[in-house]
Length: 151
Image 1 (cartoon, rainbow, N blue to C red):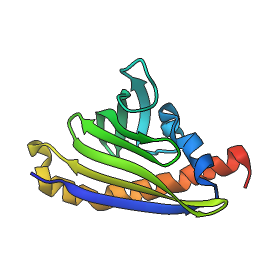
Image 2: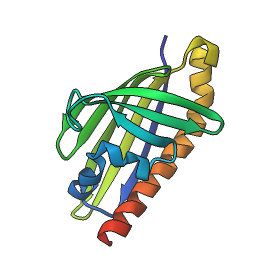
Image 3: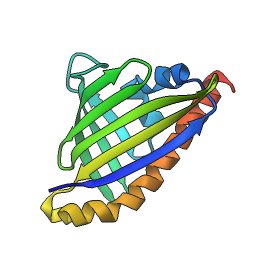
Image 4: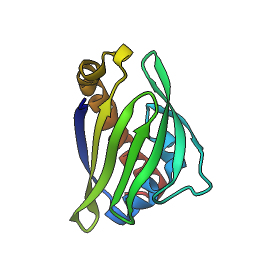
């Protein structure tokens, strides 16, 4: 069974190194991800490949614990994750330099829903909702960077 691919991106007024410095702190994702309520590490490490954590996720009335593990990590540019909970799949953040103080952050996910959430059909129905939330999340990430570092 395949999931529904979702891709969102945003060009932000910050260098890729500045964006990475925020993105690499997984526990801080709750500051800019509207759907992430809390993050609890389940590994002793808190960054890099092998880092695992549970994220309490809320989308509208739906609340679940997303079990994740970092599967790829290239300092300054890439963070990949596998979802191992009720919703499964893979995701990746990638940073691309656009200019000296501008970069594009791309967020790609392919998610699979359980049968009782309509499986592939549920994933495709959720796709535009999640894309909308994640675009807002990237906007909030840029706002966080602006507030904390000035732009």
